Amino acid sequence: MTAAEKVLHIRAAMPVRGMFAGKEWLASTQAFPIARDLADKLDALGAALLAFQKTCNELYHRSAGGEDAWVAQLLDLGKPERMIALGRNARWRDELPRVIRPDLILTETGVSIAELDSLPGGIGLTGWLGETQTALGEEIIGGASGMIEGFSRSYPQHDFLISRESGDYQPEMEWLAEKLNAHEGGEREVINPWNVQPHELTGRDIYRFFEVWDVDNVEQGAALLAMAERGDIHFTPPLKPFLEEKLWLALFWSPQLAGFWETSLSEENHALLRECIPFGWVLDPVKLPLHAEWPQLGIHDWNEMKEFGNKERELVIKVSGWSDKAWGSRGVSVGHDLSHDEWSAAIDHALESFPRNPHLIQRFAKAKVIAHPVWNEKKQAEVMMRGRVRLCPYYFVADEEAKLGGVLATIVPADKKLLHGMKDAAMVPCSINHV
Image 1 (cartoon, one colour):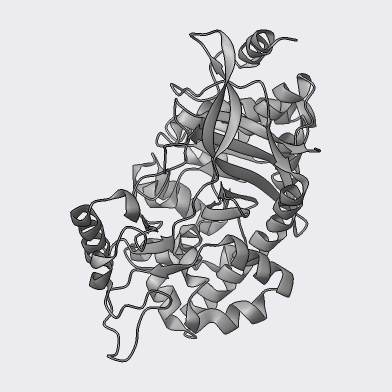
Image 2 (spheres, helix red, strand yellow):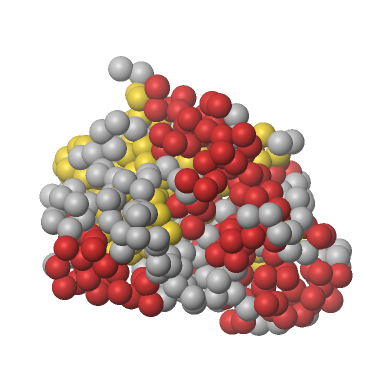
């Protein structure tokens, strides 16, 4: 089959309504190949990230009880009391997200975790790509049905509740529901909060596709939360705003918590997380004692960072979870891409925002430049694109095990610093390079 014929096959296989409403990406007839050692690392990373989330959950609840109280105080900044209480509800104290998706930057030496998402988009898209590319004869990680089977194991009887804010992802979730129903012989529904009465959901398990920080904009949101608190409805991922904070990636490197992570995580998981989580700091405007400095930076005051040279500014500032800018590539400032004045303004903004929207700062992970074939519509042929890659493995949790269902690669032009879906990017499933 020629490249042109493969592109026609891929386009013909896409559901009429599209997998993403109003969004585009470049077509490619080839999966993104990853080396066997990296594939093995991705397999191991699922168990490490599940252990990390369990440990974060325990640390927060321990802190809320008074031990290392500063941790919960930090993670609760900017959140309404109602949401803090919701996160601490005993009904779901030990529950964790059942799908884990890290955003991994592919570097020259491995992968670097840019974000950890427990309410990710792309589940349906990755499932569809796996199914379609397998039909073209490729050996896709997870195979044709890895995403469907993984979701089915983790969420055996859940319906989908999708908010307006998450509406762009509704087509892929409808595709996912149809595939699950065919796989299981069930009758899962995709529901919107504006076309259902809350009492109609009594007794149901619901996969919530809305952010907790956005619940005020979800029709009947207050009634649905009250039902969850009474046990009339069961939401997953659990209603835990503190778990959706990027700050955890900085807290992993906190000197005050070093002993806790070492004793709470296995040696293997701890070592893998240290390898994959870039060093980071919470941008806390607290005054340090005169003899102290921020680890690895050699500064006593954050304002000293404003005078860093371009090489020293290979840092990324990110807003954490309780913000409408805390997803995608919003609320991100890449230090060495900014002028002196822009970098100074980004630091000032982060410090001034601390009581409402804490920020973290991390070492910038430089993405490896690769070449991958993409379809050129004008030339009606495949051409090689130099690009950088974000890998999104999807781990589905069931029976205390995180199993890899598939891996989505987003390949953006090499001149882009922020790696995310865009019309100039290619989105393909991953395969294992046997060469």
